Every structure is written in structure tokens, then in C-alpha cells.
Image 1 (cartoon, rainbow, N blue to C red):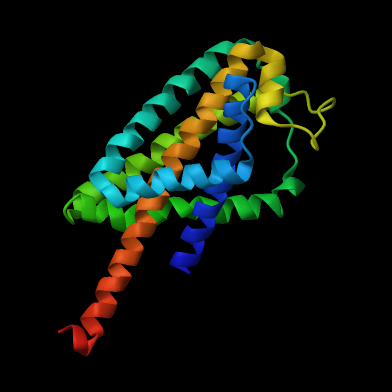
Image 2: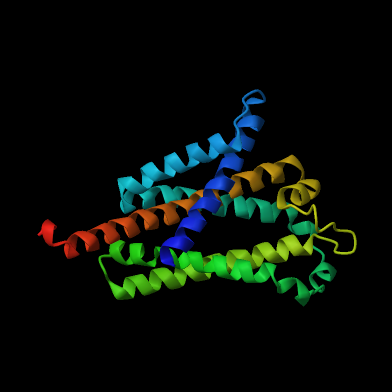
Amino acid sequence: LFWFLLTAIVVAYTAEGGQLIAQVAKEVTDTTTISPTVGSFLFASCFASFAIAGTSRVDIINRVFVLGLVATFIGIVMQISASISVSNLSHADWSAVYPAGISIGILSFGAQNVVPTILQYLNYDPEKTQKAILLGSLIPLFLYTIWELVFLGIIDVSTADSNSMEAISVLGKIGGTTVTDLVELFSICAIGSSMAGASVSLVDFFVDAINLLLKDDPESK
């Protein structure tokens, strides 16, 4: 189950990363066209090399992504906070929780797949690991809460089209090209940071599995 969930998450991040690479390549060069499949291959190859390099290297790369994520997040909030309407936040539709909310809830447990890697990285110190997990859960919760308040606060539910409501298009209409660029950078940093943790956890999983198999194999002794 651990392997299945972690692999599914890596596949999802790889698919989204490929889309972002293809989109950025087209916008930056205006001539270069990269298919999402090729973009996914480049994305997966890049993070596979990071994961093989070791947790300490991934930690450095992940910090860069997190700094970029926080910087772009603050920029987005500052740009569109003036457009928030309190009346938009009063709308509630609990029927929308199922089934979409269930799948999101299951996906949120994917963050816990990095716990074994964190424990190993912190030299199996339970107190440091508990603090890392607690802070690592509370900080995203705080940021996600602000994100929901901002995004839902700028959407007029009576006129919104739920079938075509994407973050980049909605925020772009309100904040212009600056916000659109910030959202794209935010997406890249978010996917990159998530993929960094998931990929190194997947590598560590296979390393532990191989070590256990070799330990139980009489011919390897």
C-alpha cells in the first residue's frame, strides 16, 4: 500500500511537471514546442538524479523550491488581496465534499510518506522528527488556509463557471500578467518541492526493501 500510494503520487507529479515544462518552454521561447510526454521524461529524469544523489542534496534543492514557493505566494496574496469580498466567503456547498473532497483527503496522506526518510535524515532522533512533522504540517496548513480565503474570496459564485475555473485563468483576469507569471512560478515550486520529497522517499523505500531481501537471503550471507 505504501509503495502503491507513493508511486501514484510520483506519477501524478510527473504528469503535472511535464505539463508545466511544456507550457514554460512555449511561453519563454515562443518557438520551442515540447510535448507533455517529453516534459514528463525530463522532469522525472531530473528528480531521479536528485534522489539518487542522496537526501542531503535533495534537502538543499527542496529549500530553494520552498523559498521560491513562499516568495511567489506572498507576491500573489499582495497583488490580489484588495479584490477579496467577504460576501463571497459566506457561500457554502457541503454537497461538493463528496466525491472530490474524499480523493483530496486521501491524497493529503501522501505527505506522510516522507516520514521514514525524515527519521533517517535526522539520525533517528524521535524528538527532532516529531517537531519536523508538526511544523511541516502546520506551515502548509497555514498557507493553504490563506490561499483558500484569497481564492474563494475573489470568486463570485453566482457568475463563476465551475467547469472552466482554473487558478491561473481566474487570478490572471484579476491581477493581470504579473499574477499569472507568479502563479506559474508558484506551481513550479510547489510541484518541484513535492516531487523532491516523494522521489527521495521512493528511492529510500526500494533501498530498504532490497536490504531486507538481501538480509533474508541465505546466499547473501
